[in-house]
Length: 154
Image 1 (tube, rainbow, N blue to C red):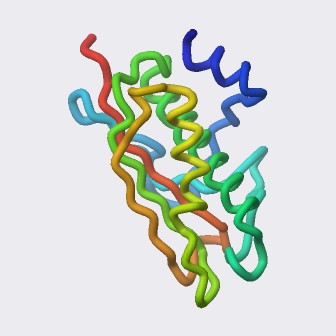
Image 2: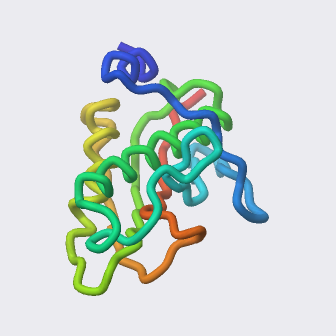
């Protein structure tokens, strides 16, 4: 099953690519490696999850925010290469969690992205990862995520 059909079977769809919040491009390709810029939990032009995990938002909301960030990263990738089935491997995920003092479950938040990618890509979706708690994110976003992928040979 191709990736977009798999998304549909999970009841999900790729969001429209959010407009950059600064002076950068959503994704850039260097040879067979593609990097996304940090993507937030934006849906239909609005930040869906704002605030600090452990204060304003629950772990479950953070998990969903990370999943939405991953969908936005995939949207950026599709915009760059046209077809998500050109992804050979998800290589690396870097997640930043807007964390209240004492919140230490960043890895469980970023599992929202990792679980989605592994569900969509199977073995090709297994990746290395960084989950970091930060004191602030742009526009008070709950989570920001970037992804690096290896593309199939053309």
